[in-house]
Image (cartoon, rainbow, N blue to C red):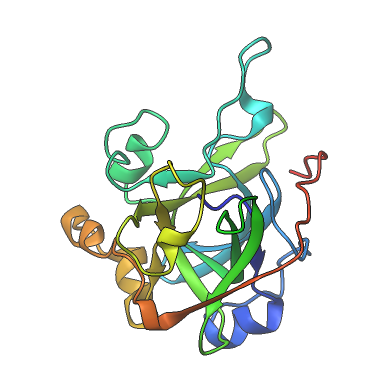
Length: 220
């Protein structure tokens, strides 16, 4: 499952996703767990709003002392309505778009893990389906966090090539541009669920890249 991606730049957010970034702080060019990155969510007026949010619905810092943190960077579509970490936010319709240039997955076809970059064949930025939550810190600041939603990819010609051979194959859900507002605003959860589909094979291209290790420092 995706734990590392390249977020959209400010100009692409403005042009491709039609959001205003004037008040948006800066973010890192590459995203790992707990890093802050732009997501697009509904605002109170029913419009698109871009905010910075931590990658992982529950931040590492939120886990009580002595309890081992678990990853909430990805949520399985099959269990998102049932698992305690995600269910309440799913039922409340707290869906978001995660805008990006590409995401990375490990490929084991050479016999060892090789980092691959997956992007749109068109070269355009794109958005994947996400779920967000908002919380207030003890200091009174409202902060956001998010998870990316995944679906089974065992039969997908491209996405089935990633992760260890014995593991189930998973894929992020690419939301078509024509469905951005429906994903964000539609109140029918069955309709939202129907959008959780594998990306069309022809949409994507992939290539090996350097094996950059995950940084040890949390920035969110």
